[in-house]
Length: 282
Image (cartoon, rainbow, N blue to C red):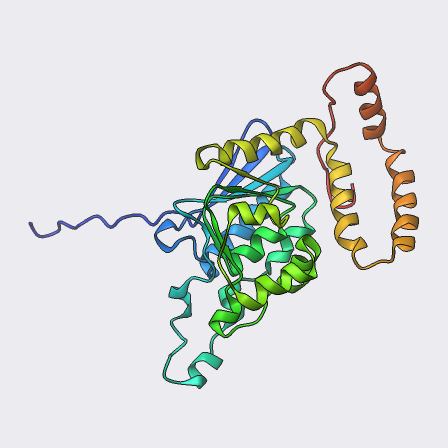
């Protein structure tokens, strides 16, 4: 090697791949397969930046989140936990959990106005499971493994999973999964209602994208935004409060052009032409 020669350094892959399809679906792929898409500050920051891009893009009407390699997200990236020492409690106490998780928590996904669909391609554990549960619908590949794992690591139910898991599968099942930290497979996840369907691995992404495309093509973005807000906010209301609030929201929706388009397209037997979201509150 002569003076001045250098060895080219490999370019690090983006921790999240972001693709917007012509059908109005954005696909976010967690892209650290060598670390089983472990959740850490760098990946989290990029993930939320991509979500913000999708939320702001009027051409995006639905979002699919998946993973590369053999995992969806196998939990916290152990490489980001190097400040924890097995020899001292003080070292563990000094760990900056906020830096590991990122500027936002997974429940930020629930505040988005656009539907977010999880295509769980493989291992889904800990923080990865919390992220998947924050999505609005979940599809899993055959054989995908799930676990809460917290109790087996001396941890607690983190970042909202103790709130959302019982609401999806019921308190009894949630207690089993959280207290035992046991591993369960995709078929059981479907029986428990944790995922909506189980697909062959080769069909998973196309099924999830197809589901999102159907929403993008046939559902009013304004309706989707309000429905998401209703579902998550109404868990904190009584049924009477939720019903009264829904009456107000229904009156508002019937004053939007989307309502006329939805009815007209139905009677004309054609696909609806709903406008994109323009901004907060639209």
